[in-house]
Image (cartoon, rainbow, N blue to C red; front, side):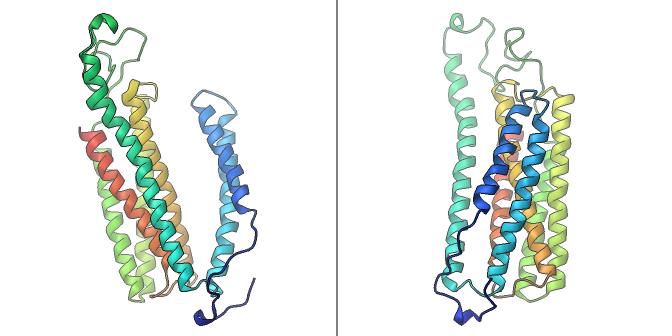
Length: 294
């Protein structure tokens, strides 16, 4: 690794050498996804695949982040690199907007187009008791044929989703306070509010896990519960995964702050994680209104 250089001595555009980290991280994620897909189908080995893949992925990320941090702290990142990081993060968040937009679009299409169109079809083509009412195929409401979908109840906004909304909104405030404190060079205040933000994110994840337990055991709401169940878990599950990733980002940033990294005028690692976290907040507000209230 190169020795530390002054900002004015940094190369115009630093290009790191070949790295094994992307491929190694992909291997870990492969086993996570493979295990997750087989877990929902009842494979006994699947949880071990998820756990092993996640541990592998975490170890690779630690090494990868370590290399990137060493490059940054040694002064190899010029203003041109900083600008490229900002554009990269902006495009990444845009891709995430499209990702969640496709899921919201699927929910919109099912509720406002598919069900009404099915309701206009002669019942002889469906089943005699079909009614175009959301959620589709909820036993006792739309008269689904016996054995098609097990009876289930929908998940309302009270109390867990509302509590989680308050947690995420509060975390956005604490993160903003931490950012302003960093810009004012108040490192102790920054670290304190960052730890509070991480704690709020962890609490959100814990409550969502409890919500899933309640949905599965008390509401009988599962992935197999018709289109309502699949869209509910698809949207809330992917959002929960993003909250977890964002919480890890904030945790790493907090640990770096404790090691003296970042300055009031050079802290894009902090800003990038903050952008991501605020994006996660906005997505949750959409989920809270569309999935839980309407």
